[in-house]
Image (cartoon, helix red, strand yellow):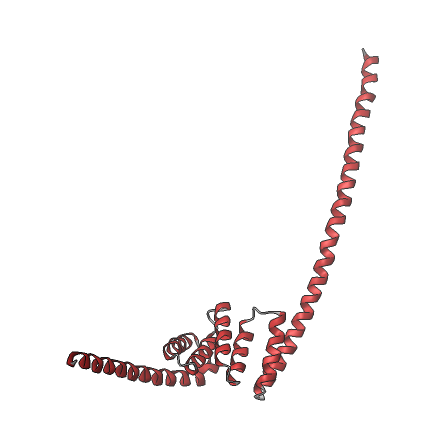
Length: 201
């Protein structure tokens, strides 16, 4: 009985050893595959981070140039710079606002208004976008739109640097409200005259 027991142990051991070797081979293969698959994304991530860093650096330079052009009242050059930035990243509300103001100064009021609206869609708290929308709308003859946008600007503008613009905004609101009241009165008067003439006929 003890003789048969000693013969069974090596057979069992060989079976376990075979299983262990198979497991080790599988682990080694899986390890190699994981290493092979994991290193590719790592290389891509490093290079994409490098590209992003280059883009951020380019954006900063272009932004500074565009602001300088605006300060020098070189609005056409500023528009070119803002356009370059938008090609790299179109999702910066400040760029859309500044593009809007540059276009406004060039008398391109409708296009300017579109850029202000884009900025507001990207960030509903972008106060100066409402100011730009208001002055563009006024130039396009939309006083009601201008009034609504300027009231929104006053509601959102909180910084001390906004103070001079807030004074202008309040003045514009007073002026536009007076004009709209006058227009309504003229319209009502015209309707009354028309109705009176229809009665007489």
